[in-house]
Amino acid sequence: MNIWPTDIRDQSTWQQFRLRVLVIAYMNDTSYLNSSGDKIQASINIATQFYHYHNVDINGKKSELIVINPKLPRDDLYIIIGRDKLKVQTTDKEIRYLGCYFSSSNSRKRSIKRIKDIIEKFLNPIRQKRITVGHIAYLINHILIPRVVYVAQLMTLSKNEWNLLFIPVIKLVKQICGLPRSYPISALYHQYILGINNPWDHICANQITSFTYLINSNSLASRSIMIRCSE
Image (cartoon, rainbow, N blue to C red; front, top):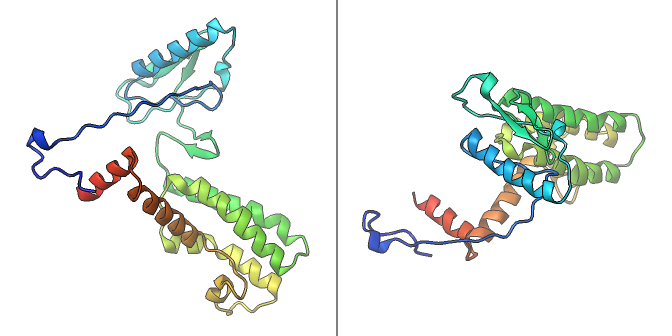
């Protein structure tokens, strides 16, 4: 796919692509993203009018606002939403949206601690139960790893960091299997021994699959990726 111009300054080699997407949005789990508060407020006003015409109320108390790199004083960082004209002030706390967490400051330590808490919350009830090797492998592969990978999709962790986070899991697996601490971890990951998945391998496999699909498709996303790879 040759979409990169020979001379970027030659407008005759440029290509333009347009995409029209029809969207039906409801206020539940709806996010507004824009470069300024005025633009977001304008979008919210249009949505408020739509719901007003259909006699639908918006619960502004459940609305939250994040402002990244603000240029205005904190008191001026707010939006007005709903029929009652509720004022929603910006927050420095994390916001949970569709299972992921967002904040105005990307705190790496806080994100890693959350993953640790998820793993510990998963392991605590298992420590009190008698389960088989097959059960623990299934729970790790189909519940724990998809959960932590989904929560961590907004951050980048190295292979070593994932291995450190997974140490309590490996320790518990060895205890359940009656294995010594010196037992090689690679054997636990072997598909013909225990078959436990590794979160790092899971992430790499998903990203490679998605990337392969996109670069072999004929979509705007594919063209955008090819241009970025050529930069």
